[in-house]
Image (cartoon, rainbow, N blue to C red; front, side, top):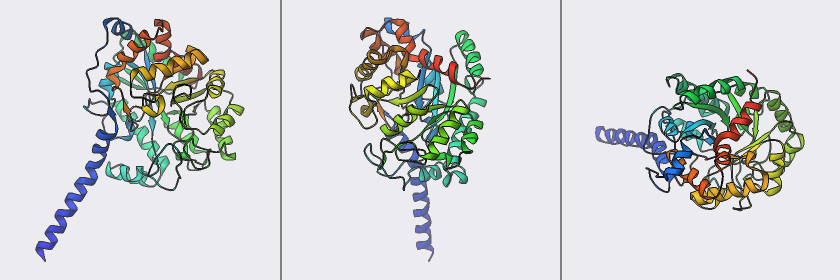
Amino acid sequence: MRKPLLALLILIVIGAGLFFSLPNLLDRYMNSVETPPPYPASPAAQQVHNHLFIADLHDDALLWERDLLNRYGYGHSDLPRLLEGRVGLQVFSTVTKTPRGLNYQSNAADSDNITLLAMAQRWPRATWSSLLQRALYQAEKLQQAAAGGAGRLRLIRTRSDLATFIQAWQQDPQQLAALLATEGLHPLEGQLENVDRLYDAGFRIAGLTHFFDNEVGGSAHGLEKGGLTPFGRRVIKRLEDRAMLIDLAHASRRLIDDVLAIASRPLLVSHSGVEGTCAGPRNLSDSHLKAIAATGGVIGIGYWDAAVCATSVTAIVQAIRYSVDLIGVEHVALGSDFNGTVHTPFDVTGLAQLTEGLLNAGFTQPEIAAIMGGNVQRLLLASLPQG
């Protein structure tokens, strides 16, 4: 009996090792770049880049078991690489549920990949069965990084937090402002009061949907692709009452229309593409671009192929140029989707190549400063809660 028992124990140990190593393997494989660093840029582009305040509207680094304060040789970003890329403000999103067989066309809400990922990454047991607890745990990870970052990473909750940070950043750009966002409002678990739980945990941007329809409304990738539910209408009001920005990335067309009809504050699209350069289920039509801009909002242009139809700086710049020509430079921003299981042209240390692409496309230095971060800075200073 001893040999079979020993063999069983060995198999259990091997299986556990494979299970717990799988997240790291997925992270390395799914958060990839077309070209590894370093990323050279022309002296003229680097000179412009070195004077920019860069803001990015979407990064999923909190999903993975990496320490934001440490530098890694895989994935798209961490604090050392963000600072090297001259990012001054990063929105960190929390991913709490994705369907099996995830695709851009049609997904049901009755399966979930994140449960096993949470277990394999040894997240607290409460996160195994609660989407709210998954969001709160990822928020705690960011708070802990800020607490241990020796002042280099600051969590922003209010306008005054951001204004104070910007003054400090102008003296020393080797520091990063961080905002919390949720990718979809399924962590509300159907309870309106959970908006307040998220707010109290530091969340200031709320994506309504992700890859499936939820209690708030329809996803661009869901089965029904519907508009706001009655519960969703109550959620929109509560979000606006709390001065939380509403993010329409991944929203169905009907959901976008419904939110536009009732929103009283600027709307945001954190990471997307535009139909004018790349057709796709979640890429924005001209009419939606114009309507979102009319609220005073901004659109973050993504870096991956489904957003811009190629994995290149040229494709990103084309989407930016199209959007600027249609709605004005003041409404266009960056929305990388770094660490969101996407393949991008570069990691965050390659942002000077995007600056060079904008220069080569004829953008002026003030326009580049607006696109690369100024527009997000302006929106947040006007829209975050007072403090």
